[in-house]
Image: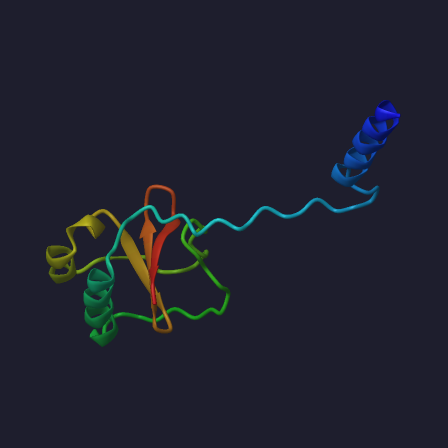
Length: 119
């Protein structure tokens, strides 16, 4: 009798653990965008204030959503950061950027991928 309950319990456990046929495996939780540069919110504010007020900085067109780790879009003019900005945020010295709307995209020129986005 004890063996019957034990076998029944194991059978029930196996049924509960086993996935039903045709069941779609659950998706992995999305990872946060991978930033390859660390910009503080204060530094982002300095960069944004300086670049968005500069009338010589061209704003690129486009509406596709871009995140850190994405490739920089084709046909975008990538510009080096002005020396005034580099003096305040030295870690962007080796990076380039483009502006789209009110966002500044920092791009690593080694792999042409977006390192960070300043909103």
